[in-house]
Image (cartoon, rainbow, N blue to C red; front, side):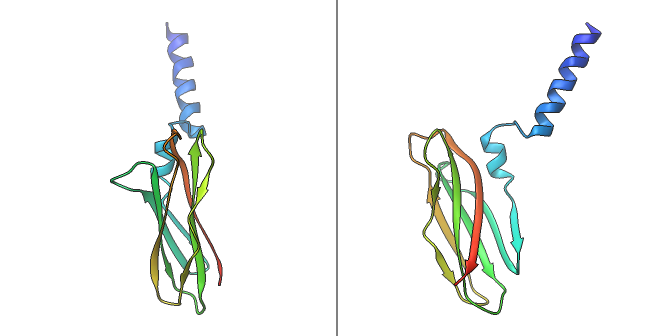
Length: 114
């Protein structure tokens, strides 16, 4: 009995270490993305669990473009349109996984100089 409890504890630790808690846990822990003075936070819509967003602020000296990318389980991944941000401005980009997907597995924000 003691040996099987040890194996169970090792297996549970491996699942936690590998991040296999499920797609919703990964998506909601996506958190903040910060690089080159462009600050973005990502998340899942409270009204639609197939919709993801990125909120970004441009703290650079020049214009940028950003978009949100969603990894959709059992369906094609999607990206929003590029959103242009002038210096000092902030905005939101939104995309949605197809209704046949198993949900959002990952959310990321991508940006580039405009």
